[in-house]
Image (cartoon, rainbow over all chains, first blue to last red; front, side):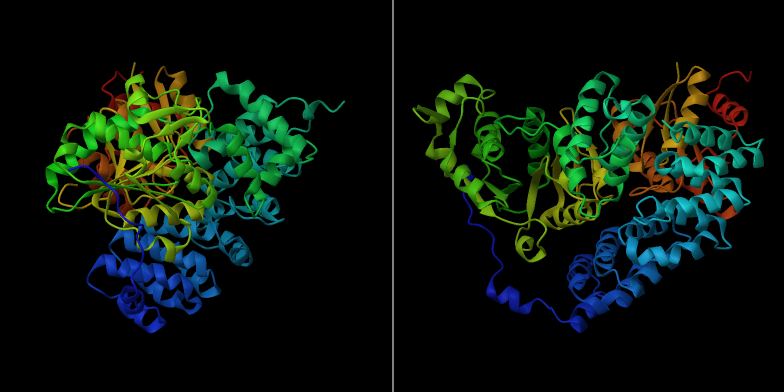
Length: 207
Length: 283
Length: 124
């Protein structure tokens, strides 16, 4: 018994041919009782632009974390409007894990998500508004700071303002200073707002 | 003279530190302040950024992530050499392999994959450790595969010729036993060269990695830290499927699955923290 | 001196809680998400965890469930801190193994009062 040299692994011809590559075949495999089979199908579907709906349906009901993670990676790779709309839906899920996985996926799709941001920042559910601000962290868009300023100017809930200020401590410029000061006056009895706004003001002080 | 181009203010340093920690999990101690500032100023100048603020905005928003990669490169130590981060090889021999052997239900060999192979130091170190430090090597077959995307470096790895710098941490007796000193450097003996299979693989190509399966242990040290968030996540998912249920994954000492994927269980052994794919009748 | 781990992905929130706790004499460490928190908890003994709910990779509930499932690890009290105030979330917190559930944003006096209570210290 010892160290044994093994040849470089290669997919055999037979394996290559038998692996379902077609959309219908792969989508069918998403219902396979074996999580490994579901996972491989979810992975291979990344190459099929019209697989978003099937992947989203899987994500909503899939119990196995490894399958769900791969399905979300594939959705992110496809990244079409269907995928993004579905991910936005996931923000409303009762499942904390799914909500956070959706945020992560959305962060990787800035161009697709940007048009939806204004609406999400005004969503009736304050938790969705907070999650939307989380997504802003990675958004490459010229208006991010303006959106954050608009939140701290008009948002009624301290928790949502807190999330916006947290992001401004990293991305804020002197443009946000006046609004930050007004925020501290709007919530004089909220220690966290005072703290966070103070930090953001410190970091946006003109040199 | 513009003061902001010559120094990093405490506020800017804190802002940068928070960002870098979020992205990589690496935190700089106060003692590293000079080290970090110097490199930040270097990059601010190299990217012709007006000041830290402009540089930071560019860093955050660059679609390609190239500057972040460059920065990570600068901030981390990248040298490859034999017995680098030796505590992980200790862990392999003292804790991981005994556990694998204890629950092994098949007769096949134990399979280890190390990627990236670079010039082979890691793979050959593993081979040496197995032969010299693992008593049970006499009872089990072990296959070592090592892969890299760069075909040139693979040629080097197969050749097994190393500089004095590369072998400086090799224990004296191993050096005498497994290396031959030549005019060109330290030549690794055929016993070890023939023990490792090197292959070219692009980890990010699903078709290429598909046949890499059924591994008991995977070493992927100091590679994923250079990937962007999505690529890191997909790589972790690839490794998940490359491992047998219950198989083990080792990352570089400043890397953490916490920035990549939640699919793995964290295991603490006396020698190291490692990651494990759930299942296999163990976890 | 009691050691507290703050688990939250928001740097400002971690900083805020750190200031509150350190000025009250506690030793504080931080983790960015549930996974990093687990990695730290395996190596260092903490006396209390302050845990956010929404975090990337491993959220607060999942972290607590995982922590509580480790029979070999010390099981200190855990305070869950979140924006959600609905009853359903509190139940989830108890089920996951939290000792207390606080709603963000926290107030220093309230937080300290509960932390001291959970650590068995006298209320100031």
